[in-house]
Structure formats: C-alpha cells, structure tokens
Length: 118
Image (cartoon, rainbow, N blue to C red; front, top):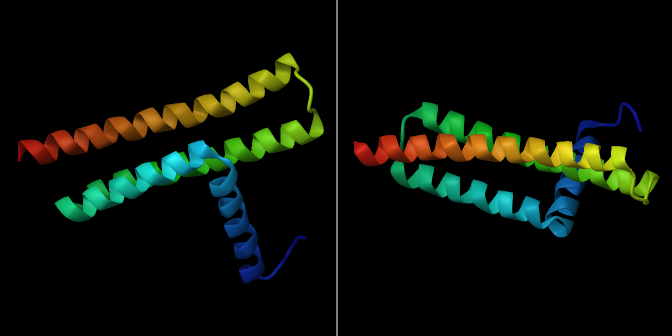
C-alpha cells in the first residue's frame, strides 16, 4: 500500500472521514460544532487571526476524534476483551479529544467576548 498515487491516498483519507461520520456520533457532533464556528466567523467577519485560531482548533479537535476512532477500532479488533491497559489507552485518547475540545471552547469564548465587547 506504500507509494500509492496522490488521489488514491486522498480517497483513503476521505473514506476514513466518511466512516467516522457514519459510525461515530462524537465525530458528527464535533463536525457540527466546527460548522457552527465557521458560520459565526462568516457572519461576524473578525480579524484573520481569529479565523486562524478557531479553524486550527476545529481541525485539531476533528483530527483527534479521528485518531481516537482509529485507535478504538484497532484495539477492539486486536483485543476484543476488556483489559486494564486497553482501558487506559482508550481513556487517554478520549482525554486528548476532551482537552482539545475544552481548549477550542475557551478560544471561542475569548473570541465571543472580544467580538461582543466591541
């Protein structure tokens, strides 16, 4: 599977996103939140730094959700049973998504506070 043409690799990536959209409610929720951020940005027309900060955070959260989904599916396939180490791996991946989500929410609140105070 190494050294595939660019469009074939892009197809793999889009397939992964489509699977996550279909199977993972958390990913769908995060996509909806990202869409709402884009709508608010388009409506309020802030400085480009806010676009950069908020879109970067949205991308990080969505990427973390995809990593979390990939890890969970791989672990469940390789070891379907419960194991303390597997629980730690899954919990840590979920924790990473949570931390990025909180960070994104805090930056969005800062954006709202600056925008509404102007």
